[in-house]
Length: 485
View 1 (spheres, helix red, strand yellow):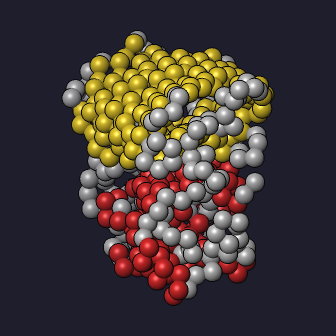
View 2 (view 1 turned 180 degrees about the vertical axis):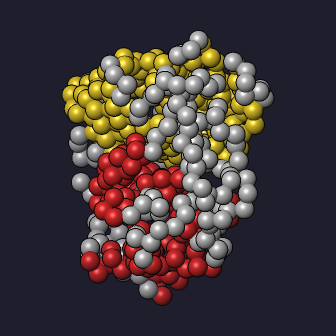
């Protein structure tokens, strides 16, 4: 397991306990009162750091210098395609500035997973130095450009610039908020230190800065990001039966761990700032690359068409999304903007239905296929922009989804790799049977289909059935005073 993959596993495990400890139920139970010293969400932020944009940019630069020197001095980084790629200097910088951008041939996980994680460090540098969401967005672009021109001997990579920058915004804001949720500035003693340690995988640079500044033990007011309103966490552990999309139709059964996190309830919390509500899913499985899936969608803007007291609610939403699926049989990833409607309907005292439909603009997607990629290289997938859709509905019992239906589709037009258009579809169904307030049995069935149309060559299609059974642990959904869904 590579160190970046280990960090993601640590994020899921290290953040689970503190998140669960502060979880709230959006349909029942009195919400936890905010800290007395916390500022209202629509007032000036009394707990934010002063705005220091220059310091934020310099911290991003420091991250790049540290990573480059670590790769060269400690790892002695080398690969057959680029040689000792971290041994940079004026000659390589001049060459990169002269020759400009290209599409690289790195493996799928490096391009679609690792680069967004690196970009999140640049974004968090802005948030930690008092900048808001929009003020922090230029920093991943700046940090990525610095690395592409000056951090490697290879020419600047256009796909790396996209994935590091746009993916870094999504993962940076998500981890910034989760780190604030895990930490507790008002706590003390061993519990306080354990929370600081648990937040380190989410925000390594911020955690080190807090340690050096004495903030691991100093008591102060918590930031407003620590009060997301409703919060839900589900952990699923079980087995997975998959059928490979190759010609031999190889079947495999392996263990799987799935974590779903919902930060903020869009029907309970009116929109105020970007990512005040987001959803994240992390899927870990056996094999060479244990991170099989990472999907995060955060709202950038929302407007409700109905009253909060209505049984039927309707909200217009604009969101930003990162998708990464690196299963043994298929790979799909991308950075996108989604626009659509979210609906909620009350059905009696304990049941409600949540539904959503989105159109998706894919700024840069990646799809693997037998005929895709670049000849005589390790790249077996295509890059390109595209469009897509995502529709789904869920029947919930006391906030627990007992039946969920979803259908996702995308068209990616290749601009790097094979001359092709790739069409993908993924209908799926999930069921859950509650056993106690925190435990349930669940099952998932999905059917991934890809059809590729190549210019001047025969097209081809493939399918990938995916079946899972698991035990579910969920945050406590306590019945109480009825609220709208």
